[in-house]
Image (cartoon, rainbow, N blue to C red):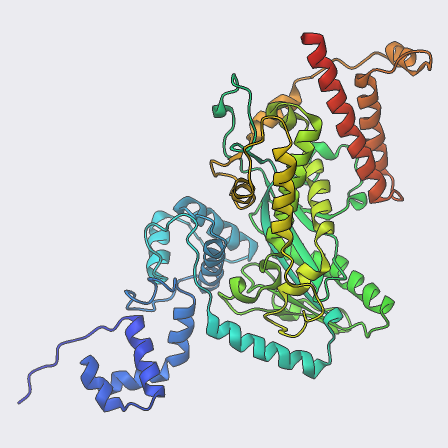
Amino acid sequence: MLGKRKRVVLTIKDKLDIIKKLEEGISFKKLSVVYGIGESTVRDIKKNKERIINYANSSDPISGVSKRKSMKSSTYEELDRVMIEWFNQQKTDGIPVSGTICAKQAKFFFDALGMEGDFNASSGWLTRFKQRHGIPKASGKGTKLKGDETAASEFCGNFQEFVERENLQPEQIYGADQTGLFWKCLPSRTLALDSEQSTSEYRSSRERIIIMCCANATGLHKLNLCVVGKAKKPRAFKGTDLSNLPVTYFSQKGAWIEQSVFRQWFEKYFVPQVQKHLKSKGLLEKAVLLLDFPPAHPNEELLSSDDGRIIVKYLPPNVTSLIQPMSQGVLATVKRYYRAGLLQKYMDEGIDPKMFWKNLTVLDAIYEVSRAWNMIKSSTITKAWKKLFPGNEENSVMNIDEGAILAANLATVLQNTEDCEHVDIENINQWFDSRSNDSSCQVLTDSEGAEDQAKPVEQKPSSKTKKAELNPEKLISHKAALEWTENLLDYLEQQDDMLLSDKLVLRRLRTIIRRKQKIQNNKSHS
């Protein structure tokens, strides 16, 4: 009589191997012998094939399936699903995720999704979440997950069939994606700081806004940036009419664009602008918007125009780094242009970093990032779609890398700037690609900026002084010119018929006046 068979518990990887071997034609009996399990267990694995594959795809591909043995589900399956997708996205972007950040994000998703129950993002929940998905205790900084190439390839084929079936032109196919922008950042290794200035004054800042870029596959229709900040109307906006901003601005407390905000953007901004563009091109007002797998986006059926001709399609999980158009260099180039513009503004004003931060506001950042988005070439966007449409970029100049050219140009400018002669392209690229908490990036915290803004830099002139300065026989001071310029900017922000180019010109003049004032102050102290 045979002895009792020892109980064997297979890992998820073992089950995937068995599924693969079954597809290759190996018999149930042979596999049961090889793995030391019963034939009924092999049949159960085949029966649960889809569930096992889906679970493996949602786990860390490095360690999630090699050690994990059970597929015990979470009490809040929807929350678990969006959390692991969010986590994978952070790792794909090379963003370190701590346990505290993970717990806070889980709480945000729980509330944003309107889930019911008594959820507590405790250390116990975090441990179980990591165990369910095979997340290691410590993930190296900047480690990137490999994308699901099989899912990406399958989606590309299906999407191309969908486009042909619906007879859609590249003008009618749109992509959108979001990213966080740390808007207070200068390169510490590039700028020669004053010797008496302690680097301890500069700490990692969590002052950021969320930007979402959206454009069609030709790159000829770029919608205004969607920007999300925490404040409904930041202090820097003053009397600014939000409708006059060069971006579409929303506010929320969470880390990423939540469902209600995204749906509002889609219905009030995306659909009307797309309809208007297609009408101007003589095309049927029919389009599709390609989005990432939705951690906090509404379901597909909730996002469509009233006539159902403008719809969305979601990418499968874990393919963002492979085929998401905006993640193929577009978002990265926008950030490069933003940082280059910020550095140019710093050099033009010719003031020390602390004074620069005191003057810099989130409104400045919005104008600067809008300028950066406007500078993105259509060929860069077309190139980003080549994995979804291999032949779409044939007429584009594909050998041009906007980011590389920008880095080379900026390095040349810096090398001809006093105290920055040592800068090279490698320094610039390192700063372009750095995170806000990296040692190559210096920023001031929100509290420092608020304290500086709370302190009056100069006492405002009395009405009598203003009248005297308005006299054409009097020499107008830089101080007065700066104040008038600030007032004129406030005025323009309140008007609904002013061009963006006019506002940018005035902002450029303000930078020049600040620089002149700095030079005059230096002369008076020498």
